[in-house]
Image (cartoon, rainbow, N blue to C red; front, side):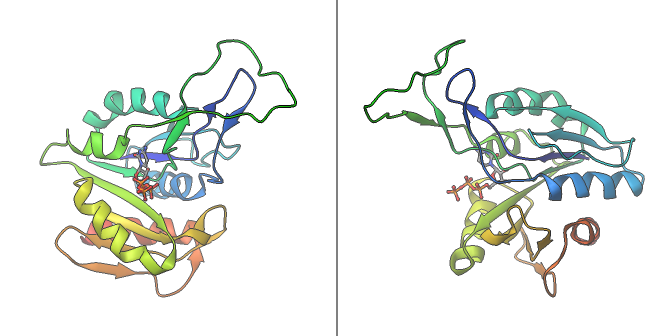
Length: 207
Ligand code: CTP
């Protein structure tokens, strides 16, 4: 099992970065739960102070989208299932001045951003028939299911976990799991992220 978790940090200069509010909790809980069930787990973990409890989880760290992009092809061929829970940046600063710090001036500052590659879509394109790729969709409640279905198709996923925006950085989670064949399974209510990890692994096994 290959799991990604946590935010990315995209450097602006030598000391500043653009990040997001992901804590990595869900991906780390999934890695712990899978290891406890006897799976061999590799966790690609972004910049978060949290770490898995289970010493059997093999952890590889990344900071940026580019670093995660480099790790995925090294680990994906060895897994049956990839669960892409990392909150990967959609944009990053285009030009990063090497080794220096931007100086404060009295003028407004504009930072040019470029889109990052869609890592999940890229890795799903290389998957073998014996591999499954699961993505996450974090969206406002009103377009949650429609967007999740769109991501399932567009990124060629086997299943997608749809979460409302409030999930980010919270202790609880409410989720709908959508499979490629149109089946959906829901958590009955908001549940703790460690309980959710077991729920998702069970639902994927049954699917
Ligand atoms: N993802 C990725 N690479 C990116 C952005 C997102 O691999 N550059 C992955 C995330 O890990 C997640 C899934 O894509 O599993 C959905 O992420 P999300 O941010 O909800 O969707 P986006 O693909 O960014 O689409 P949009 O911003 O249009 O909703």
